[in-house]
Picture 1 (cartoon, rainbow, N blue to C red):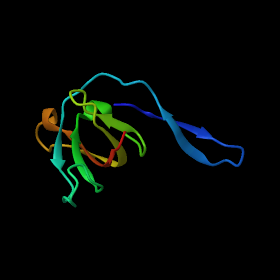
Picture 2: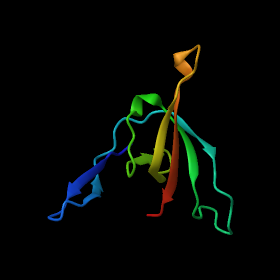
Picture 3: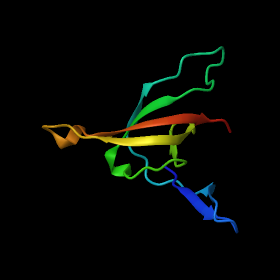
Picture 4: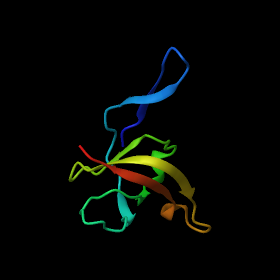
Length: 100
């Protein structure tokens, strides 16, 4: 996980200008890949399951897959709490694959 570094320009416009160094690697998984459009890693919205220890996630943060180096830019993140067992809580993250 790499948090967005948000800066404000002289006009008061906020933007993510860079990302902080990567934090600890935590478990996660791909929940849904976008429909293929002729490219293996083409454009579209990816849904990721992320460890709840990463909360809060904000738009423009990066989720990094440590084993491959793939990076996703967060669009939205939502906590999914299990009604009975908190050990299966997770974060549902909609994101786009960052082309590097």
